[in-house]
Image (cartoon, rainbow over all chains, first blue to last red; front, side, top):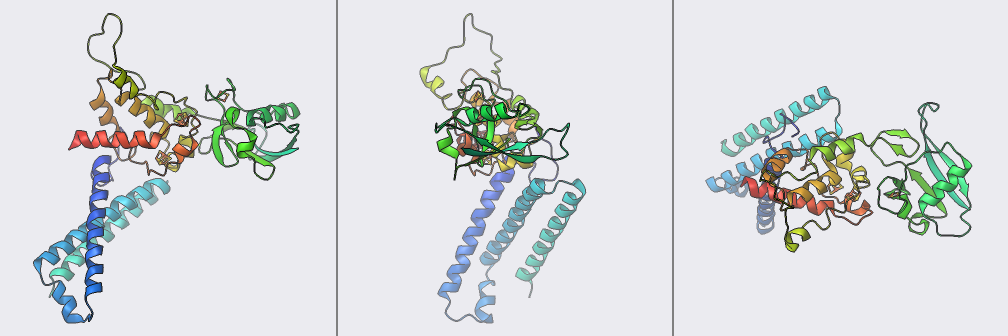
Amino acid sequence: MVTNITNFGRSGLSDWLMQRASAVVLALYTLYMVGFFLTTSHLDYATWSGLFQGTGMRIFSLLALISLAAHAWIGLWTVSTDYIKPTGIRLGFQVVVILAMFAYLVWGVQVLWGA
Amino acid sequence: MLQVNVYRYNPETDSAPYMQEFQVDTKGRDLMVLDVLHLIKEQDNAFAYRRSCREGVCGSDGMNMNGKNGLACVTALSEVVEDGKLIVRPLPGLPVIRDLVVDMSLFYKQYERIQPYLLNDTPAPAIERLQSPEERDKLDGLYECILCACCSTSCPSFWWNPDKFVGPSGLLQAYRFLADSRDTATRERLAQLDDPFSVFRCRGIMNCVNACPKGLNPTRAIGHIRDMLLHNAT
Ligand code: SF4
Ligand code: SF4
Ligand code: FES
């Protein structure tokens, strides 16, 4: 067995499943948003902030955000192990990606539950 | 006259590999690429390549002909030549020992890693372990592999991680033993494959299927392994 410590879920299977599951969530969220834009004739601040008032929509958005973070991490981790051969640069890249995902996640929660 | 460009590299005398052009008189015949290589060797005795059976059985003359991997002995000029030109290079992604001869160590290491033999912890029967015709049928499309490496060396995932990704050839063989009713080590075999590289580096682009001179389908076998892993874990 090939050992590794930096991938998402410790096993290839769990990464693979997570990648598929998060893709489905993101697809559903995208469809929902496209549907919202198509059925909303007049888009102003009130309708936009109204959309995110409901707890359901907030949970859905947070789920999409977490899915995005996981999806991006697994994908970029794979890209980095394919193409970045020097260990130091690869590790540096992975740290940057992790920090970016974490920042986006916290920021996203703040936006969703903020005033 | 056929214009043939071949990859040349002799580490003892050349500082870098280069392409050399030969004019080969095929006398209008539709020769196999291997025959053309023999004619080139008559012009330059130092030209090196591997071959043995010259009938698509031994798997020693895998190479890259006009951009596609295949066995030189069963690839006719009419299948590959474009605009009267033929370009022959060694299998991509493996270290070149000399001219068209590559170092297959990594390829064999991955093959060795999947334990390509039956593992069975039940007492051995007096004569042999029997299989039903249906059980035997499951091995069709798997056991025919001749380990020519045409598939693995056409796979980008194998190029980037030949030390960690088993590659299409090794995975086809891994499934050949997972699918064998006489093998009892299924769980152990699967446990060896459940990391992010060994199986899951396959991106399913099917270069391997496109390259295999025996018409085998490693991508399908990899899908079966993934299903078995999923089945085992959920
Ligand atoms: S299908 Fe998988 S094993 Fe075959 S060439 Fe593509 S990545 Fe490699
Ligand atoms: S699967 Fe096909 S291409 Fe790959 S090593 Fe076996 S015979 Fe060669
Ligand atoms: S020489 Fe044996 S397969 Fe081509």
